[in-house]
Image 1 (cartoon, rainbow, N blue to C red):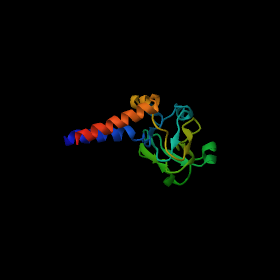
Image 2: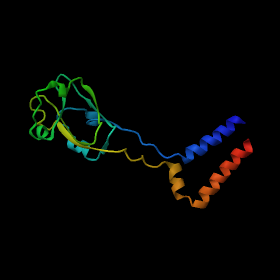
Image 3: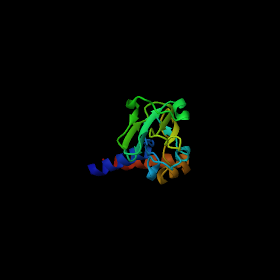
Image 4: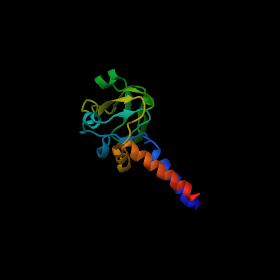
Length: 162
């Protein structure tokens, strides 16, 4: 009997709980990774990045690296002389910790000029909720009467099981 009560309570809470959106992890370039001959502007153009999201750069570290740069350095493909600004493992994770514009380039000679660079705008707040599932679509189409009736029947069922 206690199991049934728990299931009813769980069903009510799950039905009433709002959708939670979580941070996203993006592999830069998707299956291509971070390399030459990939259009990173196209890769990023339909994505919205939010504070808390993560960029993962996957690449061959013998021939590529990643530098987070300023907008001016991005436009001129200027690689910072300070290596502490670079990432070199081939499997580098960058947490998008603050809102604003972010610029990334490959520091190997000529790679940035050949298009191995991209910029994004990180938005403050949280990502929008994922597309609705069948339950939330059903709820959106329900009338107020149907919602109240469903809640009443759920509570009644819970009380009967007591």
